[in-house]
Image (cartoon, rainbow, N blue to C red; front, side):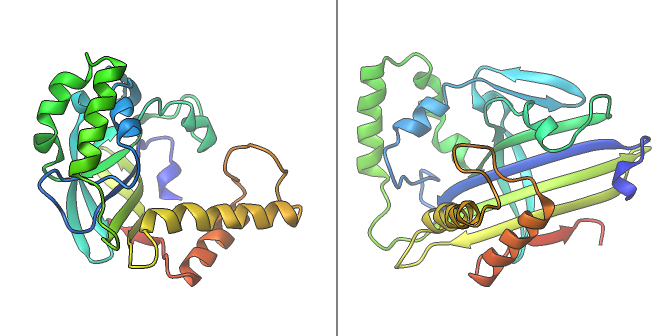
Length: 241
C-alpha cells in the first residue's frame, strides 16, 4: 500500500463526539449528568503533533479546527485530544521508528463550542468538588435533551500519508448518525456493538471478561457489515478521489 512506504510521514486522527442534532446556543446538550464532562475538562492529554509529543493540562489549550468529509458533505468541527493517545499507537499497529507527524484520539464538538463554554473554561480548573456539582446541576437544568429530541453522533478516523509534502494516501472512515423518537444515536451505537460482543463470547469467538476491543480484521469487517445492515453505515472516504 502507498501508505506504508518508509519514506512517508504519517498522520492518524480519530475524533468522535455526541452533539445535538439541532444546535443550541450552548452548542451541546446532556443526556446524563454533566459531571463526567466537567471532570474530563480537568484531565490532561497527550498526543503527537508536528512530530513531537504534546502534553496539555486542559483540553481547550489544544483545540483545533477539523473538516469532516461526511456522507452529506463536508462540515467543520472543533476538536481536542482526549487523555493519553500514545498507548493506542501499539494497539493500532504503529511500529516504533515510524515517522509519525500526528497521532491523536480526541473529542469532537460543534463549531462555536469553545466560545459558548469560555466562561466554564475560565473557572472549572479551580473548582472544588462542591462547586463542580453545583455547576453540573445548573447545566443539566439548562441544557438537558427534551423527550424525543434527536441527538447526533459523529465519528471520523483518518489515516494520511505524505511524501515530500504531498499526500500519497488519505482515507477516512466516517459515521454520522442521528437519534429518533425511539432511541438516541448514542444509545444505539453503544448497545448494538455490545450485543455483537456478547454474541461473540457466546460463540467462543472472543474470551469472556473485560478486554480491549477485538482487533481481528475479519471480525471487525463482520461487525461493520452488521452495523450497516442495521442502518448504521460506516462509510470509507478517499480524500484524494
